[in-house]
Length: 336
Image (cartoon, rainbow, N blue to C red; front, side, top):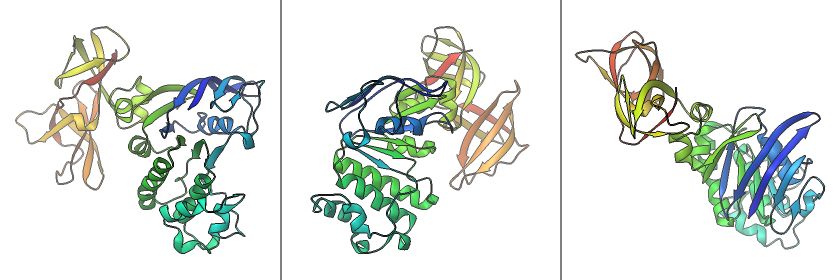
């Protein structure tokens, strides 16, 4: 099991990662997300041994690395998958996957599993982006690493291909039974693919938890906003019930034990009705999403909440509507 304890990384006098603690179980996939420049790729480079660490420890059981106890990359048995594929252009698909393998029969399993049999003798220049990434993943897994690091492996691919390939990569990692840390900017990708999600801000982990808890019970407002559309409405919380101008709802206090709170609302928590007998808000903007429309509604108190409605509901900016809280799951509440 990979274990990281109080890991800090400095670039010159700047601390870019601070006291990172995490552990990976067997075959677990941890999705690491955060804004550009928050330290995600730096963490991968440190785990791979490509850059030195300033404090803390990385422990895989078979080896242990500290600032003074250095373990070179070739001794770590780590596999890396890059966004630019990093394939040898002069080698065929099979030669790329088998590069430096003593037992090339191991490659056959991954060539078949990842649908590359018809491309064994092709050069990378003749492959699509998705095929190249499958080759890169097959090469990594054929070497039987102890853990895998993926640095935005889908960022260079189109949206339709991403949706298919993310599941192919997940299934291959599970088939290999190898733990992995997958860096991404795509919140949807993180929530749908990962066993757990870690949210990073300015080199500090804000939360590591299941996708469901990170989304529904974020540890702070930054995590709430980063992982999806988030609105906050003022209210009061007594026990496990929050009271707001949009109605009452079950609640969980995240960071406090005070009565005055701000309640986190996701668009699916807010029910919008057109042509109601009474209105309590005005639509300020509408985004068409294909199967749905995301609507922003400004309330009389100037708070803006968002609601997701069916694409068949023709809502337009300027419409007077009635919105209310409509949920059975507990909502996260924060100190006002």
